[in-house]
Length: 385
Figure (cartoon, rainbow, N blue to C red):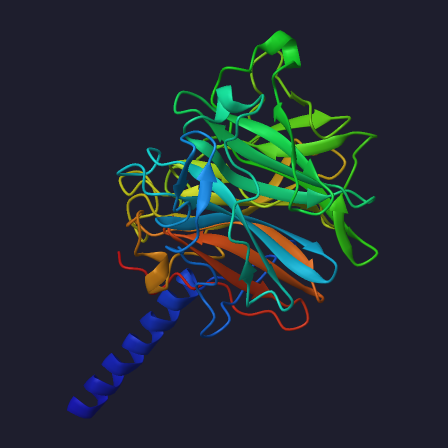
């Protein structure tokens, strides 16, 4: 009797365990990208450098421009190399948003080991953009390439008053031409003085290269920090936000109660046109009180959305759990202690997707998805409840 009792208990325990695992296991639908795996022993790939010096145009003094933090990278491929353009902060302030950001350059032959330039390649200068970039600087770049080899960077200008999306272009990823705020002229400047961030231009893989795509003869992008919006352009530097029948910004997706993105849905790397539709990778921030209680308060994890490629404003599907989340120590220790994997750069390199991300607003990491040998997505069953 006792043996049968304990045997029944063990069987019941095993059965419950299997049910729990089935309810929390992380699987991806066939339209989503992944899973991505962190290469063992390689991360973080970029960390602050206390020796790098730069003559700051604002103060006209030598400063340590990347001494405090290096994070939130854009990425591109040029001449068989991966180039990461990362955000670097000096130590001129005491917390996020109070220091000056500049954009640094790092290149790699294998996508894992990087050689950096000693000076930034985009920064607040004594130019026609200083009204928008002094003293906060240039932040959070997303980069994509046209078919003719022109690189387009959409980044945030931060004057510590209003963050604004802006464009810059380059042929070599080193020398950049600034074109100013994206929405300066649209609708007679209606959206010029509102906070705008995080722009993901639509791209596609063509001839084994990831290039900027057109839809109905126009360029298209998703953008937004709290909600997901959209915009179109004919030249990649001046953009027209899409609006609803009331003239307000057209909202395509929003935070969801009970999910990992309950507080914020912020656009990530360049969106990707696939045979299943348009895949937008994004950053979701959790609100522990109204979100997914398996994730910490304020934690940033990565999600994916699928939009209709014939009607790119129509949301078709969305992951309910993140495919990538803070797990490693360097993703949870830094100036953002809630834990962050903030995705901004993704490139098609050597037949694999390389995803570059910010780690706790302090370091840069990489994760790789091999379509021929996909890894399991980051699990959720071991997250503290």
